[in-house]
Amino acid sequence: MRLARRLRQQASAGVTPSQLAALSSIERLGPLTLGELSSVERVRPPTMTRIVSGLEDVQLVTRERDPHDRRVARVRLTPQGQRFVEQSRTRKDAYLAAHLRSLTPAELTTLDEAASILERVMEDAE
Image (cartoon, rainbow, N blue to C red; front, top):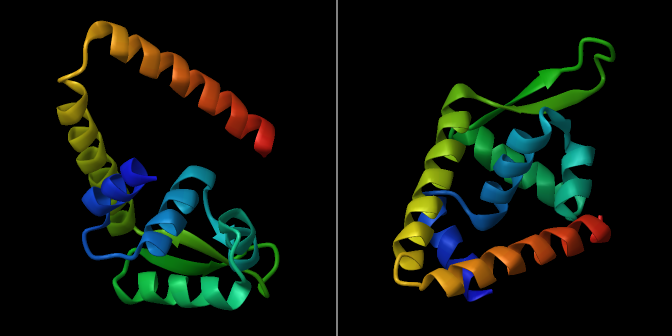
């Protein structure tokens, strides 16, 4: 949890952790409805509406009408939002890489094995 918090601190640069999580989900899954995004992020729809509104205010996302159903709006990253997500990821990677340099090869192997196990656990949880 401490590592996750530190990585969020490196990445956030002006957005809340909830906003950063929403941006990452949109980037990973593509344009989503507010309901889909609420479900993915496991928050109530009114909460997601506030999160997305804040991201719209700083022009990181936009809502677009679905071409097949005009009643549905999908949230999409703007080019600025895409750059923000990429820069956040780069900052997190650099922070983590700087701290991993002090580990021994055996410790790095152990971390690699643990990461594989954690990925498998997370896949099973979904």
